[in-house]
Length: 340
Image (tube, rainbow, N blue to C red; front, side, top):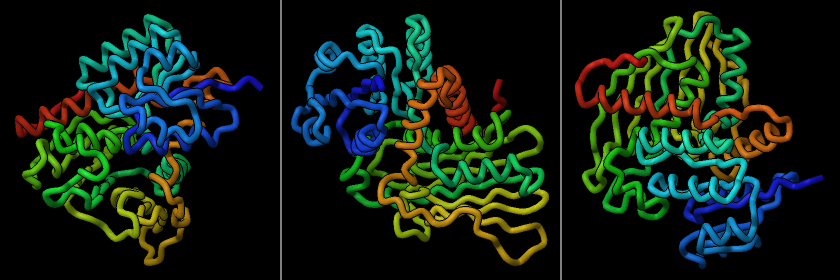
């Protein structure tokens, strides 16, 4: 079996989940991990060769796939370097690029070079959303009419908010939607299709950060679906690990309702009934988000082997960024915004 040669750039907090995922896929050989801080690269690499220069790593290891695990400001240079080095596949972390224009430039460059660019948007790969999608598509709750996700990670309070894990969060002028809300833009698209309109009311609760950290966004989807993102990073929910699901969800249809709890369990209540049935058991995975990073990586590897398009191709993912831009436009204007 010819192994897929994978290299990672970025050895910050979240890289541990990427590197662990690649190491668990039999079809993959992790050939390098790069970070400007060579000590961090060595600590994160789990035995793979460590580098402190991306161009050197690409030249020496010649990966088939570069996994970019950097903040948005570093995406474009990394994509350009991977294209120039002859990588055929690139996975780029979200938020994708500094802004929509930056993202479009990366998509254009990759398409021109014949390189497959995929966005590491992993929330749709969380096991509870796969179970919810299967239930909706199977008609379990009838016609979906309403959905709400209450984002409550509880990590945004105090003077030291985000310092221990991802301190660059504090400096982002657009934070709640650009960094976190895009997960749920993509999840709602996955479950209900693209929205046609958005309305947003955003605010800042913790004054030590630069951007917004709370707000409401109402999405209008086709076939009468209304979805609400009710988000506040300063508040929590009932869970032993508030970052497992990041909150709670309720999806309601004409024949019943699906609920997601903080333990990762999915429940179904038939319309008119008092009792709930458990469709998905509580999740006990110790890492991030029900092992969704591994699930996305495995999905990409299987798609490459089968020569089919994986989910979250960058061209398609531009729609998430267009919706993000509309959300901020709505919050600034106080008006409902139509999406082209």
